[in-house]
Amino acid sequence: MRKYNSESKSMIVELYKTGRKVLDLSREYGVSEVTIYKWVPSPAIAGIHF
Figure 1: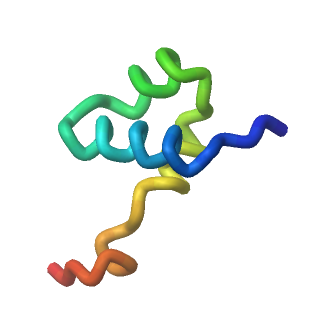
Figure 2: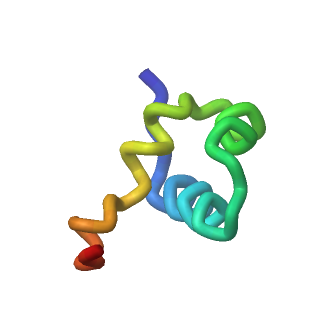
């Protein structure tokens, strides 16, 4: 299992928030799509309610 530092995680999450597709980020950085989705905070956790 590969470990990713907090800077790498934050960078990938920020790129996701700018509209980049998880599939593209996964391919570019060698991180599984599932892992990226785990890093992205859910709206409920972030305090956003719909």
